[in-house]
Image (cartoon, rainbow, N blue to C red; front, side):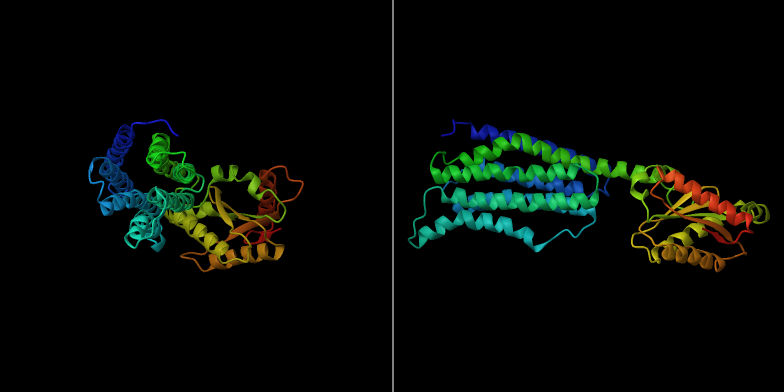
Length: 379
């Protein structure tokens, strides 16, 4: 039998910890009203506080319906956790299955009493055990959903995963309580004691994980911003430096592109026209990679000035040639004045130790295209 533990003190600790994070989430929302996911997470903790306080201080032991509703609210308090993560990830908020765990908890708690009304006696402690099944189901369903949706929101982040795992970690606690009831080595309050003891660690992990998600997303956005060219929006050399291993394999084709006589465009039409030409070229390259025959999405990189690089992973020679010819055709239709490009085309070789070696080879082909008279492809 578990030693006697002050259940009221444990509930008070969980309520105070939850209330603290309610204040934190609402404060964050007041500072950024567009981050409404904080309201969802605060609502979850507020529901949890209400349920715990009700179970402790509503002194109506004979009112089965009230107690069953409060236990169901414990499970339902996980719904705003999940909807908050879904809102953060830009996903649909409500799914029908979200209503299942609270319903199972409510029915499980009421079932022994309904059975008694028709003369069927169920084992003592059945209401706690059946309610624990609903609570465990809720932790599993919502924990898995948080992990999945957080992975979509911040693919390389850990905050949402920690929050989801914290919910899943409650499940063994409920299993222990259920087994204890069945094998009669636990007190009637075992379920509450184990859950509240788990709260002292898991509640902290859950909320810290949720708090980490926006910070991780902000870091990803900053990193992505540092990898983007300000004028054209395509990737820059800093991104290319980190893309070494992903594209360093045969089957990756590189097209090094340069605008012919770009200086004369600036001199004749002004730098604004030159910038517009660069932006039009970048757009044409992006559209060409999207409409191409490549097995994987191509990437466009501004190497500097009027030079661009198209990376074509898992491409055939035919697909690479078709793509660069498509680029030349699109550029011929752009206007508002006539301009052309020269292109150097090469494939990454097995002997290449770095992607820079293949880029250098594409640059040499580009130089050959310019020596041959410009407005052409050299491979």
